[in-house]
Amino acid sequence: MPVAVRPRRARVADGSQLLSVSAHARTAAPLAAAIALLMLLSGCTGGSSTTPSPVGSAGPVGPPNSPSTGASAASATLQHVVIIMEENKPSSAVMGNPAASYLNGLARSYSVATNYSAVSHPSLPNYLAVTSGGTAGISSDCNPPGGSCLASVANITDEIVASGRTWKMYAESMPAPCSSHNSGEYAVKHNPFLYYPKVTRDSAYCAAHDVPYSQFGQDLATTTTLPNYSFISPNLCNDMHDCPVATGDQWLAREVPRILQSPAFTQQHSLLILTFDEGDGSTNTVACIFAGPAAKRGFTSATAYSHYSILRTLEVAWGLPALTRNDATATPMTAMLSGVG
Image 1 (cartoon, rainbow, N blue to C red):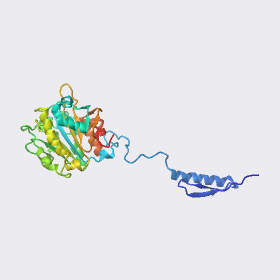
Image 2: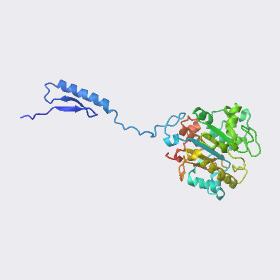
Image 3: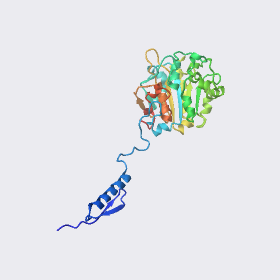
Image 4: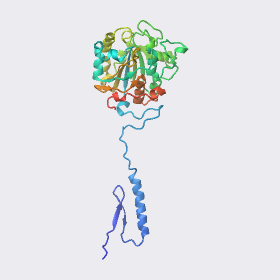
């Protein structure tokens, strides 16, 4: 004797009852229509079976001339970057050197790159590389003005301004804003922004952005007066160019704490980058240290980086396009940032 089958109710994906299908339907047509309708509605509510990526996860790497989509929220909220460029010392001359006790302490406390290289010799091409992604064909320490000693290329300040951020160059011992002539311990070759016509062609703009280091203390007083991007060149003695390593280290021991204790570094997610323009004839591997709240603590990276990597790191952090193929293909130093890597 056949067993009676109770009518069953089909349910869509959200659990609501859709229709009743009798097991004793007289023809197959109503059953087929009901099943087709069920499948159609289930497909609309079920969606793809692929699990969506969590918010903030790394996405695909963008093309070379677009901002990387792999920056994490920690790097994307980078609020201030201060770069200090020291002079003419390979990493072996300062790392582990008792005369550079403060610098070494900073490296132990924060993040240090042990395989970081300058890109050229002498000084000027390296300053141009870290600020524009290339050397603009300049291979000497020539002084502007002069057509053969100008870098008529886009530079990091173009991108910073376009993104709504602010910048300043602070040159120690510079006699007046936007000074393009050597004076005492001030060397123009260590002031890369004076080689960019986009900066210098407007004298008022240049004077407002390329200033003596004596203005840095005033700007450091609040989070709003400190630019988003600050580039600092100590004078020829304090940058270790003309004076011993110990002299430059004493300058760092006096100036860096002011930066790390400032409102921008105690109240915001900010980064201090300390590096050297070039090494010597035997090696161009130089020290590079990340410090401040945006840097990892007690971290060492052996990844191969260069001056182009600093530029790329800022482009990734701030969603800026690459300036050249050099920085587009450089490895960003995001592994040394807190909350990244």
